[in-house]
Image (tube, rainbow, N blue to C red; front, side, top):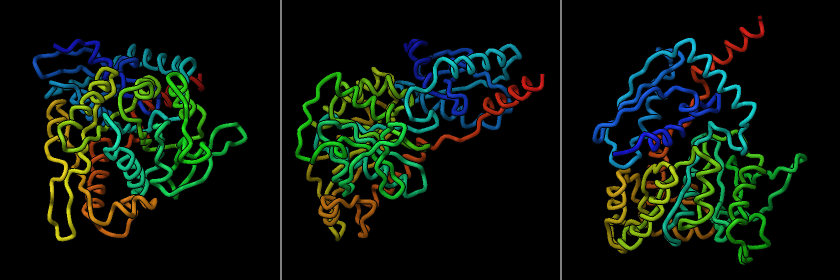
Length: 377
C-alpha cells in the first residue's frame, strides 16, 4: 500500500510553470484514493474548462505512473470555489515574496539527469548527444557536466574554451552553436588535472553551477551525473525538484545490477524515473550484421524491475567511434550510421515522454486578471 504522503511528494514536483508553485501547495489536489494499482485524484482547477486541463492531467498521470506498482491514474476535475481561488493567489504571492527560485534554472525548464551505476557505459556520450539533438530541433538547451571528477563533455564536444564571468559575477556558459555548456573541464588547467574534491565540496560545486551560472531561458537542461549514488545525486533532488532521471546501462547483467542502485536511489530521493537506455546494445556492421558482443537483456530487466520504459537500444557502429573520439558528437557526424539513427530516435522519444512546458496556464492568466482588478480598486 502506497502512503498518501509519498503520492503527494511526487505530485509536489508538478509545478505551475507561470506561478512557480507546485499543485499541492496551491491546493489543487483535493483528495487521493488508492485501490490496488489504481489511483484516483480529485483535482481542483481555477476553471473547470481550463484550456490547459489536458496538459495538467497528462503531467500528473506521467509523474504517478513512474511510481512502481501504479498502473492506472484517474482524475476527477472540478472548478475551484471562490475561497479556493483566493487561497491559491495568497499562496502564490507568499511564494513569490518568501520563496524566490534559488537557482538560475527556470521552473519551466525540463531537467533531465543522466545517471549510471558505474563508469564506462557511455553515459556522457548519451548526455552530449541528447543535448545536441534537442538543440538541433530548436529547443533552448543547456548541458551541465556534473561529473566533477571525471568530466568529459568538453572532449566529446571538441571544445577547449574557458568559462568567464559577466559584470554581475555570474558564470557565462560556453556556447557551441546554440547549446549552453558548463563543465569543470572548462575551469581546470587541462583534462589530465586531478580535482581533489570530496563530499561537501562536490555538492557545493553543483550548487555554484545552478546558483551562479547565467543560464538562459532553457527548455531543457541535460545534466551528466557522475556514476554511482554519491553526494551530487542526493544534492540534485534537493536543489532541482523538477529533475527526472534517465538510467543508462549496458546489456550485460552485471551492469544492470549496478544500475539498479541508481534507480533505487532516485526512488528514495523522490526523483521520477523517466526510462532506461541500453547503450552498446550490439555491434552492427555496414552490411547490417549484428553481434551481441556484450550479451543481452540488461536494459529489459531494468525496465521490468522498475516498471519504466526502455526508451532505446543504442548500437555500436563501425564509423561512429573514431569520429566521436575526435570531438564530433554522433548526431553531428555526416555518416548515417545505425548509432546515429538510434540516437535521433532517442531524442524524439525524450520529447514525447518529457515534452517542453507550455508558456501559458490558466492559473497564470487568473493571476494577471486578479492583479489588474486589484490595481483598479
